[in-house]
Image (cartoon, rainbow, N blue to C red; front, side):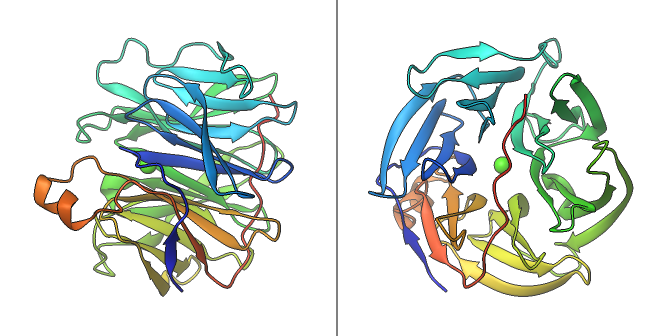
Length: 293
Ligand code: CA
């Protein structure tokens, strides 16, 4: 199990990948450069399809085009023209130091995305859910750095990462209403002495959870029912940020990484930091769900 470089792009802060199976394109963002990339799996080339300050995640929409988060709200993006339009009220626009961070759609096509404190120290952030016809609702508050999300194959559990906690939380999840309840700890980086903090994540078809380690140069695979570590995939970048299954058979795991917050010595030692990687990990993933709004 090895990760290979998938793209020539050297991102400052690669993040937020999602897979469009109809187009054969993996969308991802560079938050610091404010760029939305379309990575064509057919020829491994990247195209810039949108720009917006601190764009933090991007997802396909069921009615065509893309949806994404900028600092203080949800937006549509037409990847052909680059046009962006607000599709929600503004969120936390008057809260100093906050901005949107990671997000993902659930199997009922609701767009979940959370905010973070830019100093990564104060629990001023929240997790929001945006459902078609229902606007944006706050699902959780007291979050410091809102990050990875995922759902179990039976759609009964939602996983969620607030990075500084060094834990992956699990909630009972209602597919019908989108409500979450009964929070518990599924994966604990402290007890298992893992390097770095949990950042982005995905769930595979066997229900196992893949977590990107910011500051840990790896992805790890876990059984969320037992909290046991199953596998480690080394990535040649300390700041491994997120991951997403893609490809016709959903069997290629794409991984984003970052150059930010590496000193000169570390940057010299990690020439591949900031690149997009791909690995054949021997298991299929769950599909990327679209935004229905
Ligand atoms: Ca992240």
